[in-house]
Structure formats: C-alpha cells, structure tokens
Length: 120
Image (cartoon, rainbow, N blue to C red; front, side, top):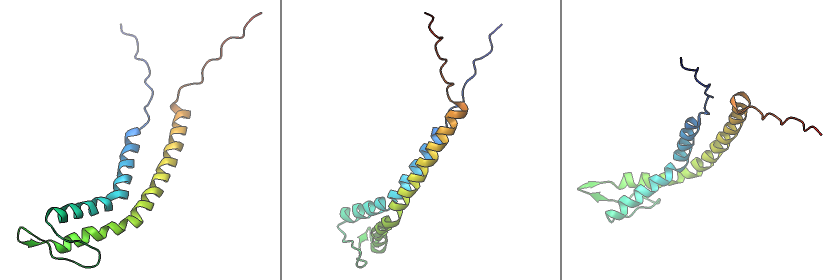
C-alpha cells in the first residue's frame, strides 16, 4: 500500500505577471519600433524621411513615401506611450507586491517552530 501523497502548495502565478509586463513594455516602446523600421527601410532604399512633408520613395516601382512618413511621425506617439507605460508599470508593481504578500499569508511557509527552552 502506498503512502498518501504529500500536500503540494499552490504556486504563485508568475507567468501571468510576466506576460502582463511584456505587454506593458511592448506598448510603451512600440513607437520606437515604428521609427526604427521606417529608418531601416528608408536607409536601405536611399529614401529621405522627415516630419516636415512626404517625400517620394520608390521601391520596386511603387511609392512608399506616405507609409514611411506615417511610420516616422508615429515616433511622436512616444510622448504618450512611454509615460503611460511607466504608469502601467507602477500599477503592475503595486498589484504584484500586494498579491504576493496576500499569497504568502494564505499559502506561504508556516512560521518556524521555536526551539524548546533550555533547561539549566
């Protein structure tokens, strides 16, 4: 006859918090990816891109100037997404700390057993 299995404590849901953190970082830095993509495409095809106006950029017979202009100007969206991402990160961190503290109270390791008093 086998002994009963040992109780297994519930694990803290770290994966959920890591996924949310990755989404926050992707949201905050998405405009940087847009600007980098714009610069990479424009530089590799010898095109000029700036925020002032649309410049023609012919790639394989098609003009991508408007698309590159839009990708470049989306960089200004960082003025909103980076502070928004910072705010979301602070909220994420507060929720994580509070959830972890309550988790330890409910499912954490029990307090250690004090040693027996010494007899003289």
